[in-house]
Length: 290
Image (tube, rainbow, N blue to C red):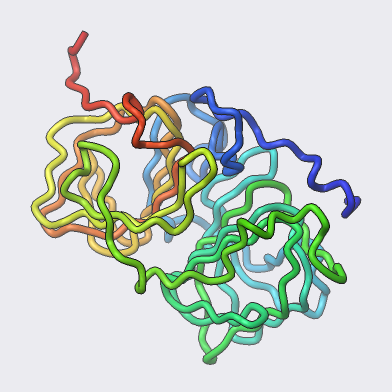
């Protein structure tokens, strides 16, 4: 791939009518339990049941970089994907740049990236072309993370930041434990709490959602956007499916999601490609309504 031209790859148009400015590419994805895109059909599954590729590393990293493992959870033909990745204690990688935007959320362990250390529940957003320092797993234990690419990703040796890199969007490390809890944007989750990790220019975003104990959403919902979610702790019953730790969901735009209920509460990592504060993005729904 020509390093000078990789920024020319346009984001896909969102299937709810958006222009792709959020650069998440969540529309029209396949998942580990569906090898084809299914319109308006949500998919929930336990990521522990997804087979892991044991010889995984980012294309372009030198051969001496040890392999990690990857469970591929969702993906699009444009190269965008969400994975659960494990890097072993021996993992070291040289400095370089990625050819697409990358989001990282650490599930366990510790890793050094250049000057910064990321530990459990730390987040990073690395725009395409931003020069990173060396990578190294610390502490003698595996690092496990959610690894989210917005296109075909290559790792390249590059002397500095690419001239077109969006440095103003770079988040080297954000420790979510230090962030205050804020309110949610929708009536359906009014009694829940939210921590923004990154707000996109189209006002979609990446955040943590805490559902409080004794939560009852009462009605199904129509979601007019694309969503990915991963359970970090606790649970939420979504219809007949108990969404527990390590479960993943992909909900295409205009899906009708069953009622959400949790006696004990839970903590969830969420990515959404639209501004939820706008009227009509989340609608309570009773079957038979006209």
